[in-house]
Length: 279
Image 1 (cartoon, rainbow, N blue to C red):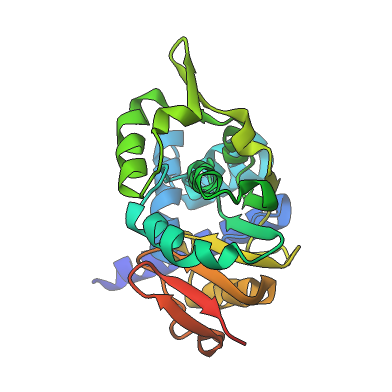
Image 2 (spheres, rainbow, N blue to C red; image 1 turned 120 degrees about the vertical axis):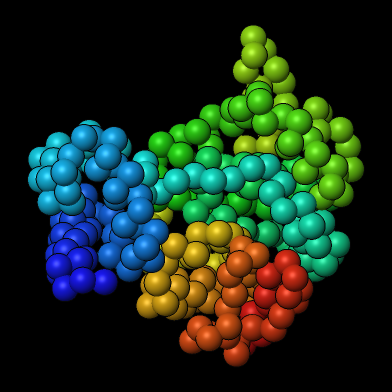
């Protein structure tokens, strides 16, 4: 790398730092400790779509035009999810965690970073089949209000139905997946009773605090975008939010290893990244 290229790279880091600081102060969204490579890629995606020359031009527009910010926010918080994603995890949850939840008089579950709600609704279906949905309150939170609204609406993209049905069957589904939705004029909507015990709310893992005590916290494939400092911060939040003997479930590429709370959990199912709070 030439001296000029090195200098350009440092300048770009400064620009991105200033952009993220500006977003935090102006709009309250904190991306300052997200993975640099990931955030840089998404910022440049928006720069190219806006027809701009560099990060500083994007910063100027974002600071003065909320519509531009919302478009950038859509790039920074990309909802990537599906119903019964990673069916083996749901199957393990059904076999290894549900039997312990049965002993509780009331169950509280937090889906942190729920995106458009597919995994939340998957959990509701599974708990319904296990006879636990009526005594469960599921809290589904995300930073992205547009994604939350889609989750509340309970509408499933019709072109995803084949995949979702396959995932449901592989997860150990006890009925027909078609029992849980209605189709009308090309729109597929989940049955309303599945959402009766779900609370959808905006929550920022970076800046917001714990708001309840939970028996299960599920946060899958969210922290892969965080740097080590932010991951540690969020893990402390989850630990403080879990009831004694509560379960934490993270994504397949995530772990609690090397976090400040690692020794306070036992590995319940390493392959499916299910951990139990022991102290």
